[in-house]
Image 1 (cartoon, rainbow, N blue to C red):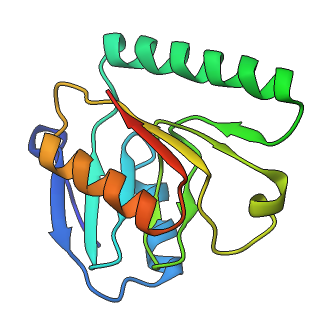
Image 2: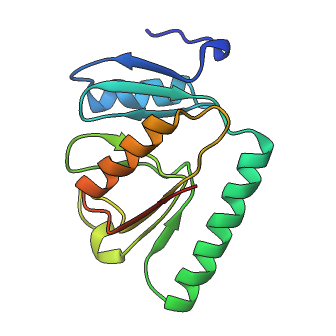
Image 3: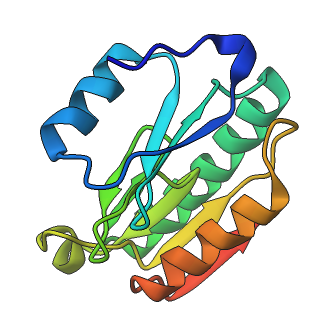
Length: 144
């Protein structure tokens, strides 16, 4: 089993062909971290957000939820909401909105995603992640 020390986070590890079961086990083992898996077989283990980033994310999720409530449709997710995308990756946006119609599909991608750049994020990785969202069907993406 993979052992990761928090001092080494964020960490990217090549794990091609990771099964759904093995991915869930890693997520359970590192419940205090954010774990994602790319279509290319890269496992990303990230620390929890710092308080300022968390507060920014909460505000974005709140505003997105207010919009969704006025619109009356769909679902808003926070960073703990993960999606298995059509390309096989398993990603969690910082905030997202997905229609009920798309939510019923497996695999699926939200129509709108937001990614925040925190002090521990690598900008190139965040931009690549946004491109991955678009390639899998996101209609609108914002990074901040």
